[in-house]
Image (cartoon, rainbow, N blue to C red; front, side, top):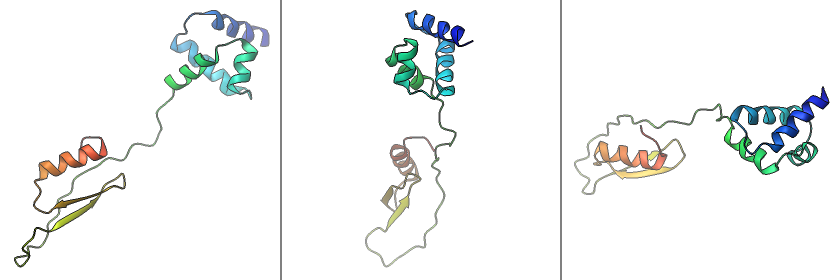
Length: 121
């Protein structure tokens, strides 16, 4: 069985390109053995750079969903004695803090949050 496995890997090493299916098989086999990438590629005559390329290309996205930003309505008490507009401080999901005038238009605030968080609300 080891000989058939090694023969299949050697055939892949001679191939000018791998299909995603072939590359996934090689990545899976690498994961099953206790060898480093350098040792695995040296043992079976595979190009090390190709293995790194396919491992990156076939990487599965992380299971944790990215935090999403959302806007909530905030009502502030009116202050008739304050000559300067008050400021609002907002802590975003990324941990950034955004300070804006309480008179900011909701659409402008939404665009700012989207720009800072890198996604649509």
